[in-house]
Length: 403
Image (cartoon, rainbow, N blue to C red; front, side, top):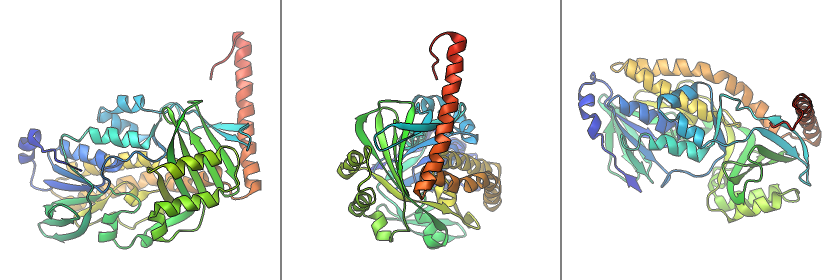
């Protein structure tokens, strides 16, 4: 499907810009790509977005919008619709094979953060720029050739075109990064985990609680999302061959073998996954590059800084895209300096998230039975402390306490 949205309302503004970047190709219509397209289009730059999927994606785990990303979406006038689409999850509860709650910990979103299904966030961001940018779905790039006057881009479906700047916002397995910087294995480090997600047709029973059940090296998470439960299978596994990582029947077979014999609701949830045509499956990986730009090509979002299992990659994608747009606006005639400034600014934000990625994996997917027992002890202590607080509140008020 191809959507063409011309920049009629911004033509005069574009003509008044200092000579520099007038046209940008954004590869990827996800969280980073749509955010960047929004801010660039508002400056009068002609923005084209190309997306491999034939429509906006509907799969993936809930993600967080927090920290500097909150200020960005507020500037986009999207804070209200994002809050309206948010989940109501407040705690992560461990359950045993019979479904009995062992204990819980509060989720990390906090009062200032927002948790929202990834697909909803991506759709809201894309809708904000759909009338100001040209979108091509069901297409991708196959070659980039740079010269002194720009970048000649060859597409899989439409005719070649020339742009002043190409931005790779195309995720962990970035085509732009591969074409310009080199093979994926040079930059992507597998962290020993895989994740698969699927939305079920079962209505949410408790909108405030995310449930997790573990076996050594394996976790099953049931999230209330915003009405229909979503299931995530997170498991430890060596890096798969590239062909198996893209083969949906093989992915489903691997999940069935990996989770065979685990109790609780796992057989039911595997059934949902086997029957679904819309699943997300990928490795949990860390991306590291010495530089994020080469000539007239630059990377943003997961293509350059995929770090988090716990949902914060979305916040970093939003803030990184906004930073890139701001730097290009502040230095419109010196693209190289703008790209250096973007990288220096955003790299400083990423270090804490790189350090925390492995910690999140150990909390969600302990490798051994002993690790699960130790993790559950922390959950029990948090539950006991929470129960004590509720008891004190009931004593003070003389009635039930509501968390």
